[in-house]
Length: 183
Length: 243
Image (cartoon, rainbow over all chains, first blue to last red; front, side):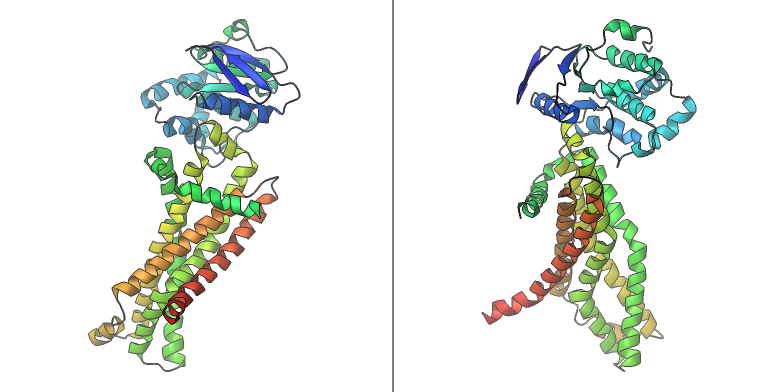
C-alpha cells in the first residue's frame, strides 16, 4: 500500500498506511468532515468504517449483523477468522464472558455508550482491509483503562490500513497503547 | 414540488439496483421484508377473509334472498375483479405502509442512510429495493389468499353439504383473464404502496418529529393512489373502447 492523497472541497490530505493521519477539525462539523473524508476514501475503493463520538451503528440490525454487514455486502467476510478472533477481542476489551451472547443479539439502541463503542471497535477490527475515520471524541468519554485498551486494539491492526484521526489534538503514538495490547 | 419528485425518482432508481440482489445482505433484507409484509400479515388477513365470506353470504342470501348459487358466483366475481386486490391493499397500507415509512424516516433522521453510504453499501439497493419488491410480491400473494379464505368461508357457510352442481356454477365466471386481472391489479397496488411508503420515508429530514409525519403521509397518499389507480383501472377500458 502506498500513500494516498485525498482531495475534497477546501482540503487535501495525504494518508500513509499504518499510521493515524491527523486531520484537524478546525471549525468543521466532525460528522460532515467524516462523511466528506469517507467519500474521498471510497473514491479510492476503500470501505470506510467510522468510529464517531456517537452513533455509527444501524438501529435496524442487531450487534452480530452490524459487525459483519459491510464485510458480507462486499463478500469479504472470513467466518473462520471471525470465529477465532471475536472471543479474543471481546476478552481484550474486558467484556464479561457471560454478556457475550446477549451482546451479539442486542439492538444498538439497547446498549450502553460503552458497549456501543465496543461494537464499533470490534467492527473496525473484524472488517478486512477497511479504512478508519476516527473521531477523537470517540475516546473522550472513556476511562483511561478503556482508552488504553481501545487504542491497543486499533494500533495492533493498523499496519496496512489507512486511518484518519479527526481532532484538535495529535493522534496517539504507539507508547500510549502498548501497556494494554491484547494478545 | 421538488421535495416530492426527488424521493420518487430515488425510489425508481432503486429498482435499477436489482443486480444487488445477488448480495447476501440484500437477499436477507428481502426475506425479512417478505416475512414482515407477507407472512406476518396472514393471520389478520385470514380474519378479514372469514368475515368477508360470512358477511357476503349473510347479506346477499340471508337478507336480500338471493339464491346460494348466485351469491357464491357473484362473490367470486367481485373478489377477483375488485374486492381481493382492494381490501388487500387497504390492509397492507394500514399494516405495512406506515411502519415502512416510519422505519425509513428514522434511518434518514439518524443519519444511518449516510452511514451505509460510507461503508460502500448502496442504501437504494439495501433499504429500498427489498421493500419495494416485498410489498409488490406480498400484495399479489395475499390477494389470492384473501380470495381463497373469503370464498371458502362463504361456501362452508352457505352450503349445508357439498353440492357439485352449485360448486360448478360458482366457478363458471372463473377465467384466466379474470385471474390475471386480479393478480395484475394486486401487483400494481403493491408496487404503488411500496413506492409511496419508501418515498415518504426517504423524504423525511430534520428531527424526530419528521417520523410520524412521514408515516401519516405514507398512509394518506397510498390510500389515495390505490383508489385512483382502481378507478382508472375500471374506467380506462371503457374510455378506450368508447374512443
